[in-house]
Image (tube, rainbow, N blue to C red):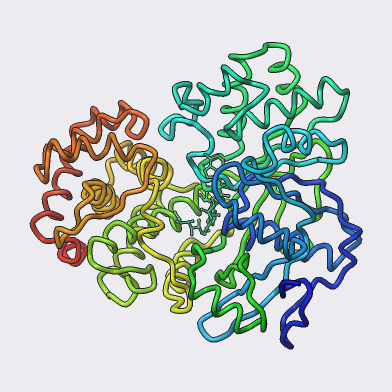
Length: 488
Ligand code: NAI
Ligand code: CS2
C-alpha cells in the first residue's frame, strides 16, 4: 500500500479535520482545482464543517490540465494539506471538505455534466482563471470567436468550455424538473458574477431562447471578492510540506496567512454559512472587488512586469528594493485609491500598508513571472479602468502608465539581458507578431493599443493616453526597468 496523508499518522501540530467527513455531500461542484481554490474556498468550507453540522462538500473538477493532481488526490481519499506561511510561523492544516473529483480527460464530459445535474448540487463555483470566461476583457461580453465557444456552439451537448458545461448542466436540470444551481465565480475578474452571467447568457442566447429565459429567471451569479496570495507549488514547497507532515503530499499547497472573502448574498438553492470561517456576505461586493483588483492586483502586475524586467524573481525580492516598494505604495495610494468609491469607514491607507507587508513576506516565493502571465486579461481591470477614470478627471497616472509600458516591454519576449522570456497569454501569438514587427521602437505602443479586446476605443484613440504611455515606454527603454522605477 502506498503511504499517503490519508493512511499515515501525521506529525504533532498538524490540524486534521475534526468532523465526520462521511456527513459531507457533494453540494458544490467546483470547476478549477488549482492552487488558489485549495487554499481558499475549500479551506473555508472545511473550517465551517469543524464548527457546525455543515454537510457542504465538494466535487472538484478540472477541465484543462491538472490531471495528475486529481489522480493523486483520489489516492489519498481527497485529503490534502495547506501550509499557511507567515514571516516567522507556519500553520499546517489537512483539508477534509473534498468528497470526490472528476477530470474531463479520464472521466469524460458526460460524467461531469451528470454530476453537475445531481439533485443535491446547489452551487457551481469556479476558479478557472480570467481566460476561462471566454469573454472580452475590455467589455466583459462573451467572445463569440473564442475557439472553445465556437466548438461548444456546434456541440452543445459535448462542451469544452466552463460556460458550455454550465449551460448544458442547467439544461439537464431544467429538463429533469430539478432546481437550478447558483453559479459563483471566485476569479479575479471585475464584477466576476456579472461577467459569468454575461458569458452564460451570451452563449445560451445563441443556442436556445427558451433555455435562456429559464436561466435568466432562475439562476443567480453572485459577485465575490476573493483574496489570499497562493503561489504555484514548487518542488521546494512540496519538500517543505513533507517535512512538516512526516509524509509526502503531492497535492499540498502553501500560502500566506491572510485571507478574505466577500460574497454577494444571492443564492438560489441555499449556501454554506461561510461567515463561521470569516467570510462576509454583503449586498454589494463591487466596491470591494474594485479595491482589491486595483490596489492589490494592480500593484502586483506593476511589480511583476517591472520586477521581472529588473531581474527580480519574486514579489518579495522587489520589496527589498526601496524604489519598487515606494512605487507600489504610491501607485496604490496616489493613483488607485482616488478612483475608488468605498463604503464609509474604509481605510485605504491601512489597506495599502497591509498589502506592502503581505508582499514583503519572505516565506512566500511568488514568482513575478507567474503574475505576469495572461496580461491581456489582467490589464483592463487592474490598470486600464483606473486610467479611464484619471483621463475623465484630468489627474496624473505616471505609475499606472509605467505599469502598462512594462507589460508592453515584457510581451516582446526578450528581457533586458537579451534573454528570451516565456510569455504565457491567450494572445501570445498576436502580441509576438506585433512586437517582432516594431522591435523596441516606440511605435509598438500604438500598435499594441490596436488590440481592441484589451484597449477600448476610448483609450486607443485618446492622444493624451497614447502620449503618456509612449513617454513611459521610452523611459523604460532608455533607463531600463530599475532606472525607470527609480525615476518615478
Ligand atoms: P492554477 O494555475 O493553479 O489553476 C488554474 C485552474 O484553472 C486549473 O484548475 C485549470 O484547470 C483551470 N483552467 C485554466 N484554464 C481554464 C479554462 N479555459 N477553462 C476552465 N478551466 C480552466 O491557478 P490558481 O492559482 O488556482 O488561480 C486560478 C485563479 O484564481 C486566478 O486566475 C485568479 O482569477 C484566482 N485567484 C488566484 C489567487 C492566487 O493567489 N493564486 C488569489 C485570488 C484569486
Ligand atoms: C496575482 C493574484 O497571479 C496574479 O495575477 O495578482 O493571483 C493574487 O495573488 C491574488 O489575487 C491575491 O488574492
